[in-house]
Image 1 (cartoon, helix red, strand yellow):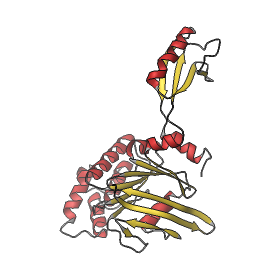
Image 2 (image 1 turned 60 degrees about the horizontal axis):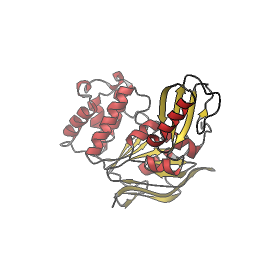
Image 3 (image 1 turned 60 degrees about the vertical axis):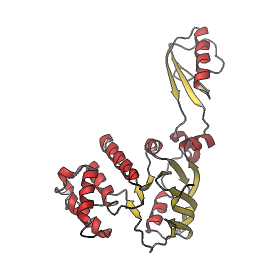
Image 4 (image 1 turned 135 degrees about the horizontal axis):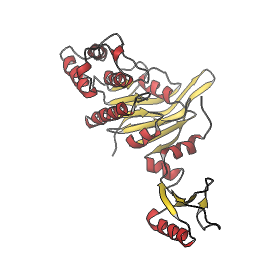
Amino acid sequence: MRESLLTVQGARKSFGSTPALQGASLALDAGELLGLLGPNGAGKTTLVRAIAGRVRLDGGEIALAGRALRPESPRAELGVVPQEIAVYAQLTARENLEVFGRLHGLSRQALPERVAWALSWTGLDARADEPVKRFSGGMRRRLNIACGVLHEPRVLLLDEPTVGVDPQSRERIYEMLSALRKRGTSLLLTTHQLDEAEGLCDRIVVIDHGRVAASGTLQELIASTVGERRRVSLSVERLPERPLAGLAADGDGHTLSAEVRDVAAELPALLQQAAAAGVVVRDVAVKSPSLHAVFIHLTGRELRE
């Protein structure tokens, strides 16, 4: 039986006449990496701030490690990494970690060991005593994350932790998060990087208009929305003179496509049909349903500003 470390039930919040949360619920299980996705204005940030104690809900309940939370409740088991870089540029990396360690309540005896761990974990050992103002964006991001986990929280909230960083820094951050999970930390990740959520998250919650539109593993979301059929595209030398059953001509004049459920069973027949019609196939591509397709299906294509 799964143990939920963090639960949100029926969260409601309005700012004036504008509703931000309209009954959103989620549960983060022990050892899990849960993705929280949604368009701009969907309610993600309000929900994360409510969990962190920065927003007082109008209704609903939040519980952490079996204990009901209110804005004034202590949150020793919780770590927060904001999207904004929240470190002091004039201080060194070591000094930043020492400051945040004390703010998290670490003792003078425990602090040096935790700072040394954080510098090693982030790969910033060699730059520990340089002012952060000299750091690259990726280095600041890694330090930003480290400042939120010095007290070894059981649950960590991550708001867009890889925004604006290069691919190498993103991979390093992924490695850092993997190491945290191995140490037993449960992660709630908000991101607009759908490939990031698809590759990292055990389960995904999609929120829109303040409500949970869907939740589950990627395969569960695909099955309940866009379906599990694959799209097969045949790049051809030229299109056949007559339409082929089950194969549609795309607008580029050099592609035939079909939707199939079993690629291994259905693709050979499609290729044989094309060959019998004198069609020369140059390449074959198979595209599986993606989180992007699920996201658009659930939230629409309307631009959110």
